Amino acid sequence: MGGRWSAPGPGTVAAAIARFVAAQRVERVYTLPGSHVKPICSELARVGIRIVSARHESAAVHMAHAEADLTGRLGVALVTTGPGLTNAVTGIASAYLSRTPLLVLSARVPDPQAGMGALEEVPQADLVRPVCRYVREVSDPRHVLPGLHLATTMALGGDGPPGPVYVDFGANLLKLEMRDWYRDPHWFVPVVRPPRLPHQDGIALAAQALCDSRRPLAIGGRGVVGAGAELERFLVATGCLYLDTRESRGVLSRDNPQSIAAMRARAIAEADLVITLGRRLDFELAYGSGAVFAESARFVRIGRNAEELSENRPGDVTVCADVGAALAALARSGARPAAADTAWKDELISANAEKIRPKTGLTNRPLGTDGRMHPLTLIEAINRLVDPETISIVDGGDILSFARVGLRAITYLDLGPFGCLGSGAPYAVAAALAFPSRRTIALIGDGAFGFSAMEVETAVRNRARALFVIANNDAWNIERHDQLTNYPGQDLGTELCPSRYDLLARSLGAHGERVERAEDLAAALERGLANLPAVVDVAVTRDAVSPDSMSGLANVPPLHATQSWEDAERRMLERPPRG
Ligand SMILES: Cc1ncc(C[n+]2csc(CCOP(=O)(O)OP(=O)(O)O)c2C)c(N)n1
Ligand SMILES: [Mg+2]
Image 1 (cartoon, rainbow, N blue to C red):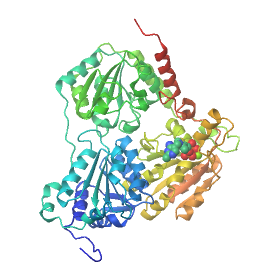
Image 2: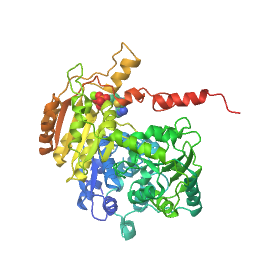
Image 3: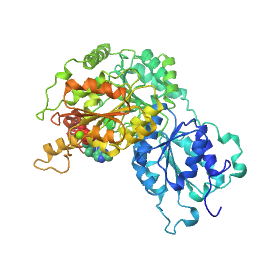
């Protein structure tokens, strides 16, 4: 193998990796060039996989993340040795918290140089281990396919929560011949997550809990993804109210009357039975705290792994199973509350309908003292462009908070439980590539956009027809509000220079427009949609105080994510012990 390196042949390790990836029905691999991984990249292209090259490895991983979340298939990123891998860590960590199935591939320094001070040498596996479901360092051609197979099974959630897995190869390995280890066709089929069927005793106990309840509430998580039909039948059969969460958004139509997203606080405070569906009880659900959920509420926890079954608050009943299978079994059981509190249920349904009724007059919200439009004015203009097929993406601080209450989105991605600013632009690129016939609209704060604005060039180069709308308030505004409120008299880095992201976009070859007045918005957004990829840079006021600023999410109370939950927890802790 001495002398100049030649392209790898069809029976090499690199070729086997590519064939394995193609067998998983992966259509695009997100990457950024690097010599160490070039043999893999070359073979991926040879088997017909589209190579999408980003401008930062973290963005490449975010793209694979969006691809996985939107298509339901494995997302794949290929990052190069050393800084390629360290740059990717943020994206990997975000997928880890989102429980998104990703295969991250890389190459290490050649094994014969390991430990000798080789170019770009860092302990790659150690760097990613805490944020991966599985890590495998392959150093022998015999282990290439078993390693990839096991890693992919783990990524899909075969033996725990789904999430990112990492496999790297000594760079010296990639052009070696695979010999007979390559021939066995059973490696080149899609890896499937082994099904987990519910035990009938668990279903019987859950059914009994439902019959005994008066105010049952189901909460969706990643477990309901792909089980929309079963969920709908379950809700009809049992009459449960339903809350979706970030992980399950879009699975059930928001028009389903039993879905009461806008009444979340009251529903969780008053339900007497809470059924979690493949969902962690994490910060978004008050860690299942008895101060926020009714203290006497019973919990039925349905899911495939310990995180979903017992984290923070073990179920009074646990059903270890695929959520779809468990929901189907429960619907078949005929269980429903024997003495349902129908007044409670009807009240929540009608209060929810009233809250989500499209309001007129958002566009008339007063301008800020800076003369700029309110963020909800911008969101209302975007709502007019959102059709049932639109993929909506949000990234930022205040603007994300306003979007959570105002944006009418069905297919939706945001910066996720990792709170990872900078993921929005890459998500939009991947969404537009995966679904070219659907509209992709990303609403991004000016600060958040700065992390990955160069991905507009990736969009131009790859003809990713996304619309990037920048909510530009010249600030890390949610942080600015927190600082003004809690650290008065200080200005520590929360102001940004007035910047023109439309001009930046134009310099990268995209369509760019700046909008200062609400009356110009609709036409500018339409022109953007007609000239994708496009950046519409919208001046919004920094005066508007977002719901997250008000609820305390921005200043992080010690016990809970929001101030009202924090207060409830403190009241509970301060109560004298009973008895
Ligand atoms: C990578 C990263 N760095 C820092 C933060 C902390 N942070 C959360 S929101 C926010 C401000 C976001 O500003 P912008 O995107 O302009 O949105 P705005 O609040 O102005 O609407 C910051 C810095 C984070 N979540 N992620
Ligand atoms: Mg901002």
